[in-house]
Image 1 (cartoon, rainbow, N blue to C red):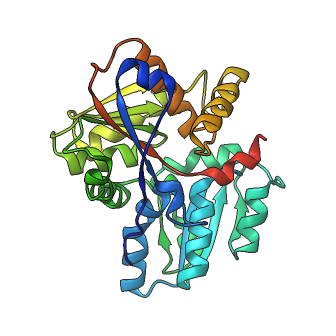
Image 2: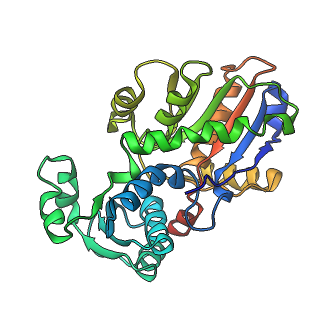
Length: 294
């Protein structure tokens, strides 16, 4: 499965210009209309493994607006795998859920207690019995396979630096949900450039521990960007996204990339980056999720 190419584009915003922080945005949202953003990279190794093993189907977990399940259902349909999704909560009719079903995914609602049990050692046993031989993918495409796939994102950007007139770059900035994509970048960088993660979930949701387990304790820094909790959207954030979209033409969503860009603005304003710094900002996709709050 070939690596889909994402363009690296200048990100021109007045607050970046004022601080003399040169920024380019890696548009992972443009690599594919359905298997979008970092989800393609998280799934790549899982899809290769399933293909090599002759696995009949793929099964994973997520919420009723899940970008991960949306990409998984699309990948299953495209590459010939049956798919099943284990969803948090009780049945809801959302645009994402309708897409999952249209793409052929079999949907199971676990309730909230059932979903919280996903970390228990015996969680997968009844599903493996129901779907024998299927490949089980962690929530959000997490784990070592997901991180290894996301390491390829670094190659995507480096191959295009000359087009921006850059001989190099100084740091990365991206949203962090499970921490898997962040860990992949840290692994690929191996300490050469720091990776900054804007946390879209509260710090106590296990992301620091996940990143440390996948990539070690060094080479990155986490910043609080959740604005009070996962999925929290407020008027200031939505106004910032609308203004940024007007000035750049880049569509954003409020749960991950929009929060990450707003957190970057705050940190640039606080002087985190010296004038002349060259940043690569990762657009992690997930635009289908905009339908959940617009």
